[in-house]
Length: 225
Length: 120
Image (cartoon, rainbow over all chains, first blue to last red; front, side, top):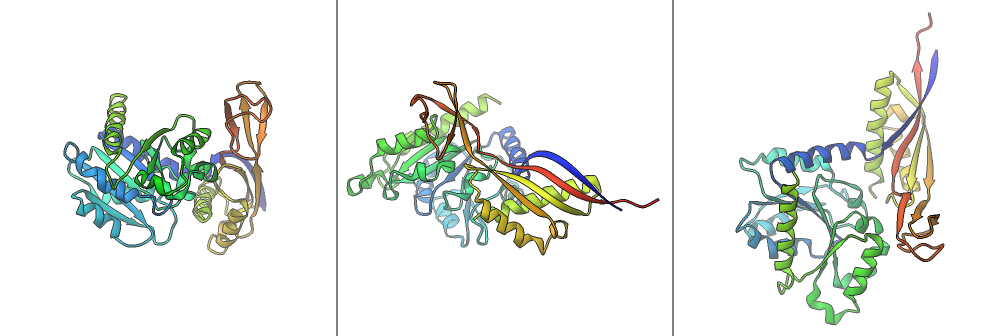
């Protein structure tokens, strides 16, 4: 005899990922690692920002970068060339990173001493990565000047889930119809509390502010433990 | 494009539920997809179709997707407003701020399990 049983549930479809992400965050927090997840479309300058800013951060802190890409070790190599520890995670075609990939990569590494900062450079994509918590403490979305200022309303979930927005490539502002104030306003319509930084990896403009922002956020997080 | 990953997660959850209840097949699955959940209902349905072949548990299952509109509560006028797209100010009174109360989630709501019982 076949019995039909109807069960009512209220579970997120991302339950499995969210569970792993929570475990990761607890582990990172307890060992004093501050984790930053970087999201943007391809070519917005995630790797360039890390290359331009992490060597200065690494003078005072132990820093690790996870590089998410569909294929190749290219980005991890760029970060290593800048003197920073980096691990490439290739997704083999998948459009985003998931928490279990971070867990596996981190377990395989099993560092002897904990890192103070861990940066996760997500796969370049403003849609899918927004749904996946990777156990980070801070999510930063990058918007580069050539992309145009209208990205926040076009990709609301990416901006809504971020605590900070980095406007990148501000050195080329003169060549594009990009109004950074308008970009900020549009982002705040989606996420009123978003912190906004204006940066250029090329000229170094705004990089000290970015580093100070990261240091402060880490201190706050550690104090709240 | 991440609907296939979402669907794989769903199958894991369904497998767990079926295991807990001693079921070998699932007859019906109901999920809620919020307008701002970043998931396209049609693509989720396609992903589910694609997974039928490799997941015996859902091979005969009906997938019901309920689309949940984006609804916000206005601090200014106290009214609930259904939004066509994300907005900060209230389409009713023009003031705000708006607090999203519905339409951001992606939820599994109901599952119908087929449980084989021994006839005594």
